[in-house]
Image 1 (cartoon, rainbow, N blue to C red):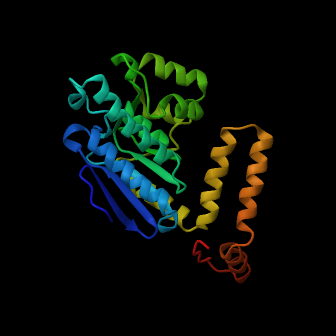
Image 2: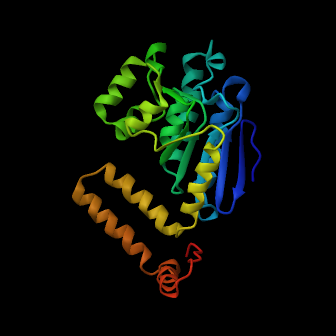
Length: 263
């Protein structure tokens, strides 16, 4: 695994990568280097999707997943410096959203502003009982610019999203679960393990299938039904000639667990 300054990237189990935001002394706030590190990591995942089958992203320490942008670093920035930094964050978010490998966010504490936006880039979210969420940008004279105004409405609906975005008020993990943003609420001590267990289940399935399913759902959410159905069939047909499709049928008939190789 590559070495980074502000994140760690590990392989805790077969076919699974664990990415940890690693600035716990500042609640894992995102500075320029963290943006560069995440961009590099996810660019690598996008470039070689066959090397892993699921990604879990979490924060170091028990207090925060990510408190958002590092406002101490931003204090005194010129407009040009601010925009240059934000361009890195924009590229990072596109790399995460565009990653064909399934991503699970394991939110272990506060996920505010850009931190909540990072979580929303994942395919789904498990969260600790201690997690809290907010998009506070409007209270600082800015707005979410790392996917928040696009990913949140897709998770909770437009009206709820506008209330969250326009007030900037924090909300609880139970509210996030009730609104459909969080898939599972976990004990703090079991959060990452539960995410890894789900990652192992995903990684045990045919990797071409999981990638095509992710792409098909994402495409369907951004187009009309007929176009989505056409894309689904194209994605489906991609798997018919694969070794994994043949292995899956063989294993079913032989009453054994399939062994997929991503081909």
